[in-house]
Length: 160
Picture 1 (tube, rainbow, N blue to C red):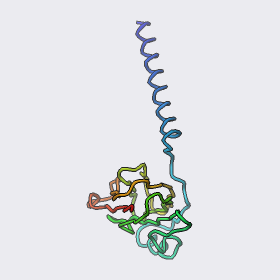
Picture 2: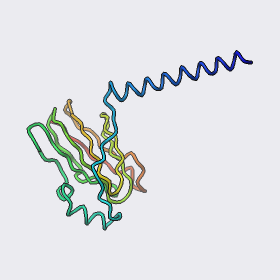
Picture 3: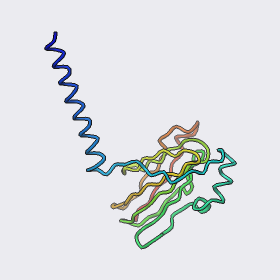
Picture 4: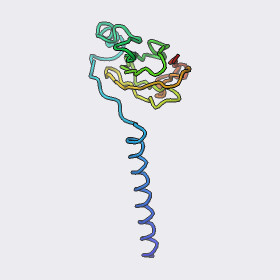
């Protein structure tokens, strides 16, 4: 019996080392990290938050702006079953800082084919950077269930 317990403990230790190695590889070698918290705009949810956002920079003008040569800022607002803007146009190789929030419920911000996968919480500003190195159309979807028409919430990132 003691021999089986030792074998089981050894197997658990090996699995733990493998998982920690995978975590270290993902965070260091692949550059996977948490988005930075850009701040709070908390004043309630729904219509009240929507009114505050319409007067709060940079959310008063959602969309893409070139902030320096080769550097862009994409301001995105997620709201019930849509993203504003619904299409984000960028040049190949540009560094993009996404600044995003939600106005009503928790939404997801997942760009298929990239490592961009962020949860958008109402009133919280999420900031994350990405560089698109390949041209194409990337599907932007909400991966957090947000209501009965959740499956229709999509947009796209066009990289030329």
